[in-house]
Image (cartoon, one colour):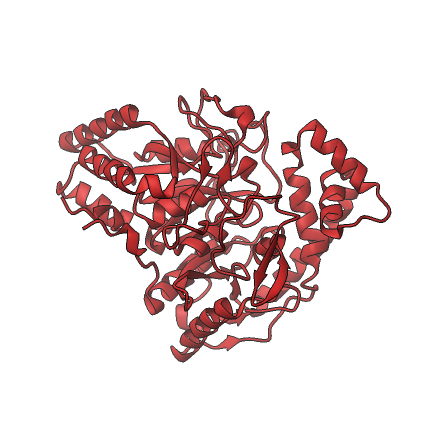
Length: 487
């Protein structure tokens, strides 16, 4: 068997299953072997479910042989982020409080994958409660980037991105509230899609101790893959109304807005509010130049009517409010004291404290400002179909474990930057519920991947995915990390 079979697209692996070139059991064993070889260096897949997966693979093989109806993912092995509940399999959210948690039911998206014939054989690493731009926690330790083991693969779906990039799994399901699908795709050199808010069920998202019954504001569940075709395949499995709402409505997303050559493209590749590094900017500028040279008109001056800084005053506070249920009582009371401080030493931490302890009245007033900005984006997308933007201001950075999201620092281009700036460009579009697709567009001079964030109008997921497919064909898309070649 080809030792690098696991690096082939999911669509190719499914074709091989269909044509009888390989069995589901053999394909599962291949991915397990790759994890045995690369797993110790990456620490991406942290919980395995081998016996049940092998039994499911055997059932899938028998289904194919007998000519029974099969699902679109039938027999394909894959993993899911440990922030999604899996029946009978440990699901921790990266938190010690749930270190031994074994749910009795699947998250809705996991159930959809199983119903489509997908075989869940493991769970991938993440930070505690999905709250960081790296994948490290006190239960499973730290995940490394296959492009450079001294760096992280992003977060919070970092185990997912590392596993996909290294060919340990063909597909992954991640979650994204501040960029947790898009950032790992960028840092690890793969594709990711953040759906329009509300079109993929979140039930079963493990983001605090009493998880599972509600759905978090801003957060979405979305696919990660090595190719855009694979991304679209899994996306179509995940979307649709929640099970308790399916009797009342169905989802039919708009088709891509226009033929490729007629799409109206805007580019917002840098901003004083969160300057991109020279290394990232050079790759993004080259990608945009290539798109323009291919005949598409690109407006580099188009901007929404609201200020970039609204992401700090509206977007990040809404995200902090949405993640506040994960705070322990002790943490909450400490944040409450900090929120009441009239002269805080750290304005960023004070923002987080105020946002995490908002009154309902203040939250409603903040959401009114969001709605004004959503209206502004709707206006912007009457004149443009696509917006090109950075995913983050830097490429993958070295592991950093001291402190937390709001008090760490990064030095980039000789400038000391807040670590929290890492989520600025993703939050800019997430809090207003827009879809965004990330596709790799090149490497920095240091050999680190850079992704391009392709943003579209509300419910314009098919437009961003289709444009990502074009960019992938133009610039090559996913590249194999050298360590992932076993042949």
